[in-house]
Length: 549
Ligand code: F6P
Image (cartoon, rainbow, N blue to C red; front, side, top):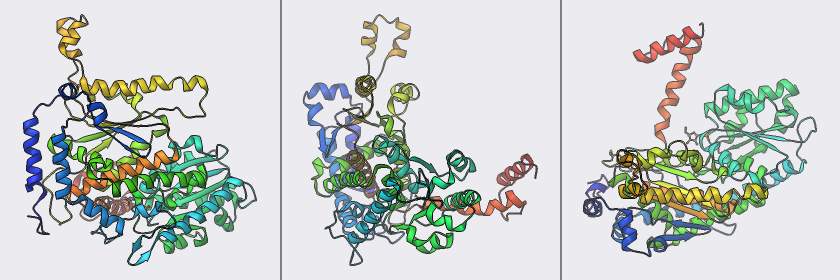
């Protein structure tokens, strides 16, 4: 029994029914499922916005899907969803509402937190961002010496970096190509060095992005960036023209020396990993312009509305979340691959790693007790064709079950030359071929039929039966990016709801931060750290020796 009086997840009849169903299914074969139902390839598909989602290549039957939906009903996923959209404090360990959906609510919407409608404030910030972005893009906002801003450097980490850095990469074809954008996150000084070494300080704008404005990496890099700027321009007054802040913490922004008139605000009900459609997206908005940014928000909203209103059978985030649970909890799958067939999505999976793993990497439930079931998977992947020549071998013939999402587009990006556009069919032929090979494999008889010598038959046999979801859209537009991100946000939500964990806190990152603060004086001054373990003591001593200290 849970502390809240509910039966523990793994003791519910719905969970037990799924475990039994899994046993009964045994070694279910995708080849057989397709042979038994010629309509499967179209029946097991859904559409949301511009996304066509094929889930036919999953190890599921209608019965499996029904049982998974029963699990969702028993764990009241839609109840928690409605509480989120209503602005209730569903992030219980931090006592906060979870309202990234309000960031893309239309102007006339009403979303209340503690009785106050937050939508006007959301749009007021978006309007200020738009005004500022236009001024930078047009050259009206100049640097301290009167020169145009030509370089924008976003300094932030985690959610204050991965979102804008990913989206900038995705939407490159829509960006102002006469501006240079860089994203600095690592406290390794090499990151800032490489980002700034060829830039002219008089033409460089730093955007310091930090929800808390206490993150040591970001504050350290921002301080170094200020020194870099002032060394060149020699006047404190320059900071006001070359630094803006994105934060929820006006006090800390002012302490740092950035005028709060140059601060773009967001709110504690926006989690860091859910924040790039807030003020944290300012660098992106400068890059693509306010209209494209709004198109992206419209895309988010399409999927928000779908998640909020679509019935369980047609609800794509619900389905994807449940399929993940099916493998994670009933097939012992440890990881989940996301494999985009678009060069522009090269940072998409890295972005999803924080979204998913920081949200659902928890072993304590919402009731304060340790869970007795697996929670979030390891999320990984890189653009597909590159992966094919690297790690796909293990997905095809390794010993692990790795469910994967394949994301591809019908149209190549418009600005490619005709010759490069012609390569798109080859890219997509790989996209379709891989999910086919993964699902259906190649039997020993098929291999023999090709005249392969008997001793090589086992090596050249593909067992197949590797489950994949295919997500296909016509074109990678700002709206489609918003749709994709919202889809994964809500998928992660569904899984956290079923596993009964708080997907919106991240206490697990705190200990390392505290220990780094304790260890730093030992590195710099050789200070003694009370209670330091023997391994770390020896490592610190070796480090100091190697540095000649
Ligand atoms: O340490 C983890 C974390 O808190 C993330 O959740 C967050 O996105 C990141 O650090 C950056 O935090 P901030 O935006 O407050 O600098």
